[in-house]
Length: 492
Image (cartoon, rainbow, N blue to C red):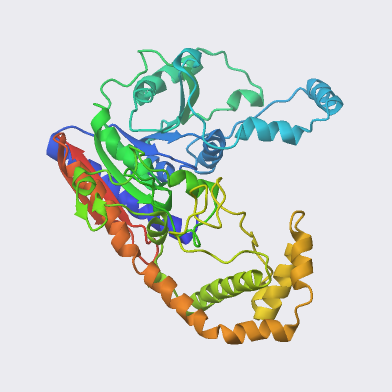
C-alpha cells in the first residue's frame, strides 16, 4: 500500500472499531459482521480481521479476479496458509500437449480462469445459480475472519448475501473435526493447512449459518452510486444495523431528475462511460433525499448537478503545489492551443452555441449518436512539454499514424514552420492565463458540490423513520486523502 492508502486504512479501521463499540454500548447488541461494499483487493477488510481489531468481515466484490488477488494478499498477511499444489508431471505434459495442438498457451488459460470476462456482470437467474458455498479464511489464534462473497451490487438488497453468512465458531468446529477425522499422511503434502488455520469451501447448511447476524455496512472510497446502495441497505435488510460509508468518484454518480444535464456541447467529453452515467431518471442517482428533490431553484424543481459539476467535485485545489499546478495548466493550455490549430487548419469545425440546432435536433457539431469523433491524443513523451513547438511536433508525429485521419493531419499540418507555431503561442498567451483562472474557479467549487452530495445522503437518512441517528464527519487528513467524509447511519 502507498502512503495515502495506509493513512486511509489505518484511520478508518480505528474509526470503525470505535463505532462498533459505541453501537454495542448504546443498543446492548454487538455488531457481528462488517460487510465491505466493493471490497476490491480487501485492504480494509484484511486490516480489520487482523490484530488488534479481530473483526469478522464479509467482503462483497463483483469481480472474481479481485477476490483472487485479495486471497493472495491474505497469504502474505498470514490470514491464510499458502497452498501447496502437487503436480503429476506426466498428466501435466499431456495437458500442455493438448493445449499446444489447439494453439492455446498455459498463460492464456490461467488468465481466463482468473479474470473471466471483463467488466461488471449481471447475476445469473436464481434457478441457474449454483448452491451457495462459504469461502472462509479463519485463524484459531484469535484473529477475525474474512468471508468472500462474489456479488454484483445493483441496489441495497442483500437478500442473496445474508443467507450465505456463516457462524465462524461453527465453521471452525466443523472443519477441525473433519481434519481430525482424516487419516494422517507423513508426506509433505499433508501439511497444506497449518495447525492455527481453518480454511475451506463449505457447502452451506443450517449447522454453520449465522443465526441473527447484525451487520455494519462499510465502504472505503466506493465509486458512484455504490454509497447510495449501501445507505439503502439499512432500510431494505432487517439484518443491517448501521452503515459507515466513505464515497468518491462523484463523476460516476447518476442523475435521478430529468431532463438530462450535460456539459456544454463544445466542452462535453465523448467518453461512453460518462455518457452512460449522465442518463436521467435513475432512481439510484442524485439526489436521494426528498428535501433536495423538492427544493425549488432558479432552474425549476429539484437540485441537479450536471456532469461538469460532478467532475469538479473530485478536485482538491487546496492540495495543489506550485510545480504540479504549473505543469497541469501548461498541459491544458498546450492541448487547447493545439485544438485551435486544428480548427484553423480545417481539421475540426468551429464550435457552435448550445442552443443552435440542426435538422435532427442535436446541437451542431454533434452526430445523432452523441457527438463528433474526438481527437484522442493520449500521452506524449516528457520532452514534448519543454516547449509548444516540441508539443506540436510530438503530437503530429503520433497523429499522422492514425489509420483513419492520419493523411488529413499530414496534409494540413506537415508544412507548419516553427515560427508559425511560436506565433500561436504568442498570440494566445493571455488566453492561457484565462484558462488557468477558469479551471481554478471551477476546481474551487469542489467543496460546495461535494457538500451538496454528502448533505443529500445525510438528509435521506434523517428522513427515514427507521433511522435513530445519522451524521457526517471527516475521518482522514485532507492533505493525505481529500475524499475524507464518512456518512454514518444507525438503525433504531
